[in-house]
Image (cartoon, rainbow, N blue to C red):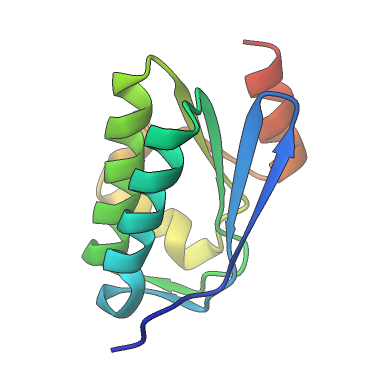
Length: 119
């Protein structure tokens, strides 16, 4: 198991953009991502989060679990979360699991930023 993963964090005003730069979002890194979300979202008091999944080609239930953890933390802060630019396979997985009902998906990070800044 690897003990790190590749990601970027960017802020646009009050919106935090978390870009996962990994091809696979699975059990190998899901625990690490959860840890990062927990630290980031609790210590920074983030209310608006965008998960940029444009680099992720494969996601499994462990990856979805990490995304749901971020969603739950954001919800407890009365914040909002958006999924941005998922690849076709990741978008399909989110839709099949019906998580798109609580995790709005937008085609680009720019659109996600715009939506959150206007809310």
